[in-house]
Image (cartoon, rainbow, N blue to C red):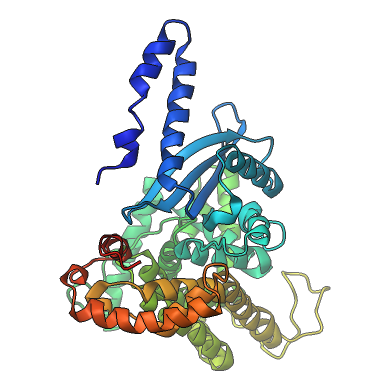
Length: 475
């Protein structure tokens, strides 16, 4: 079957254009074309359920606007996404966006009660639990669930961690400034590489490192990307490995920098990164990011298996909890060893903690308490809290339910209980009687699909399953 948009949507356009070309402008013709296109999309939707994808931005004149996309399954079982318009809004508050969405749907005789899915970015006006657009629509249409991109959600946990924990925020500010100073010129980057090669030769001679294929490759320092979890992990990993070379470059800039400001900043940064607390934060954040790096890689795979990804998420949370419960001392041992190697002073752990350099603002806690409770426990607790809130039970149940319907490998992930749980989230479509019927139907379906109908063999995803179900009239 052809695409209804190209099959029917353009039928009346030539006549409309000829009719108006003589006495109207191009803008009017474009408006007519847009109305015809949306009309074809609405007819293809045919009053069925749909999802909405919403984003906000500014045009070239800096006027706020909202883009709207409809997502639905057509009569042939094909998943269709159609851009339906750009709406100018007075502001991008959740209330303003909600009003414009309602107005658009009403104008095209679409009911908000038919919404069964939503997609937004991670901004607070979209995802806010109290007043976000997601919540405003969900309050009126309880089955209009939103599952945000899991890879982006993972990145947002790091953003939230930095915003909510001042020590983490300060740490990444220092890291960013170090990267800016060390990487601001070819000369400094060459100096970093030369010192790295020299140190490697010394380590090879001493036997501390060994040669081998893939070992001891040249490393560089790159700024971590705002939306790339793995780039933060690699940056901190390289910062640990290249620490002595970074100190070497900062010392060079502090002595021979082109101006007083650069020399002052380099000297200040060199002092900060040679403090025990910075080294502690460096190793702590590196370990935290290392534990979640596998999860990040899994979520970014094009062929990701949702069931495996959810299992990896659970494992990551358990691993972080074990780290909190029993691995503080091993981290301290690693930090102390690093400090000995780089001649960094280790403070007395039973001494009172002084924030910054002030000797007059001693807190009524020891240095050990500050590192263990306020930083180590605080960072891990906050990270776990963000992971639990952003990867909530509803999103997990919905995804696992859909993954259980994936026909790949002869319905290898089929799980009747998860599919039943998925159906329970849609009480308007599945009352108690229909749930009972569904339970029996699923038992029969999986046996039939796995062994009796070749149309269900070698399918690659749920979209293929949807089309086969329509053709076989097994909906």
